[in-house]
Structures are given as C-alpha cells and as structure tokens.
Image (tube, rainbow, N blue to C red; front, side, top):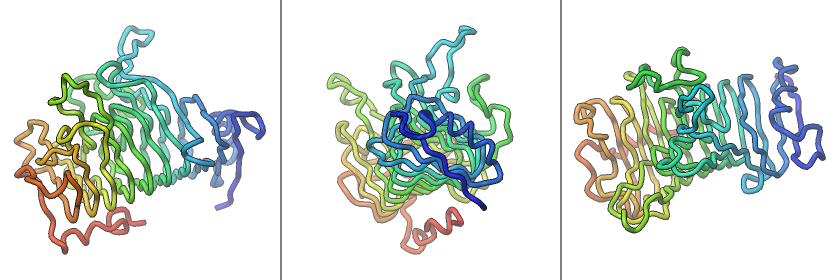
Length: 323
C-alpha cells in the first residue's frame, strides 16, 4: 500500500497546527496508508478516527500530548448526563491504527467527582500502541466492543450503542497506563507487553481502608478464547498497601491473565475481585504465572487460576493476537 505523510505542529511550523485538520486532509488519501507526524506540544482536541490505515507518530511521549476533559457527569444541552461512552479524548473506530511516542489523556479529574472519563475509546482490529502513555482516572482506556447488552437502559449511550459487536485485537507495547477505577476495561483481545500499569491514589488518609481501585474490568464474550494478557509488565502505585485489585469481571465471561510481571504492594492478597458475582466463578477466567513483587504470590481468591509452565507457554503474543 502506498503511503502519504502529513505533518502537524502546534507552533505553526508544519502544514497543520491541529491533528484534527490532518485527519480531515487524510480523507483524500483513503486508498493509502496515512502517517501523521505530530511535533511536540499539547493538543487540546477531541479526535474521531474512522479511516483505516492511519498512523500517529509523535516526537516524544513525554512532550507530545493529546488531551481533552469530557466526563460522564457533564450535563448536556438536553439536560441529560453525557455518559461514559461520549467522553473519549480520542475515539478510534477503524482498523490497522498505529500510534507511537504519544500521550493520550483525559484531565477531567477523579471519577468520584466527575464520573467516568475516557482518554481513548479503541474499537477496531490490529490496533497497535507502542511507547505511548494513557493517563486518566476512572475508565482511562476502553478496549471495545461493548458488552452485548447494557445493565440499565441508556447505559451505552454513545457512538457505538447500536452497532454490531466486533471483537478486535489490540497490542500495547512499552506503554504506561494510569488510572484507578477499572482503568482498562472492555471486550477486546488485548495484549500488554512490557507495560507499566500505575494505580493512582484516590483516597485520603481518613479513608485508607477503602478500596482504591481495579486495574482491569474485562467483558470478554462467551466463547472468546482470549481477553486481556499482561506479560512482563509492572503494576505500580502511589496508594496504600493492599488497597487495590488486579481486576474484576464487568461481565461473567471475563478473562485476564498476568504473567512474568512485577506486582506492587498495593494489590491485595486476594489479587482479584468477583464484583460480588458468585455466579461468575464458573465462567470468568483470572489467572497468573511467574509473577513477583510484594503483591504477588500471596493467598489468591479461590476462583483465581495459577497456571502451570505448560499452560503459561500458550500466552505468547503470536498465539493471542496472531501478529
């Protein structure tokens, strides 16, 4: 496939000053792979990507930031709350998207005050993020698709509420992801390789016994072979010891596996939470192998599977994603 390169710089030194302008220009090259080079700067933009074969190439993930501040509790013109799935700073609804050396942020604030606030809504197949940062609080990264049905009417209000559910494959390599409540959630098959998962503190000292958060909330579909896989990652935090969990099941068939990873002292000895869904024990799959650190190797909850060496060997990136 032929390639077209476009250049963005917030300081006006390139052909575009906004990424959204470059995305609009890219529509003229739908038959090509479009590479958008993004110079250092802070881009206060809400971006929507519907075109396949788009790449975002940043200069430095610490100096090149895409950010917005929409949040679920925002009141819309019709008087209704915005809702979770209308909050992303960047909405990717396309296949073969690639990003590197960028930060994706939602700076709305703590979920206790503003509700869910997505930095990225990632819906597509063969989505790859390398050397990227995802920064938010509650629901930082949504790895679509949505579950097949919402718990409450209107709970999925947003761009894909009535769209067919399609399970995509995502790769997150050498990335930093931060948040606290369910800050990685959704139904995709997603592989996290050599990433840092940073749990942000949301509790004051008076509430130090309160659960600080959950790294993941997968909603893997029934019959889906893989959900989330974390391999060679680091689970870090600035919150108190034993105040958080690796994950909980957004839906009953949730799957998440953590391998060969360093787990900090903030993770409780049970490791995982069942979201008070005892009926999910027979269908969800939370598993670990070869982890180390103060939060690993303790008394895991009875529904957690400790893999054998042979079982763990199945969870290579090639097996899980096929690329």
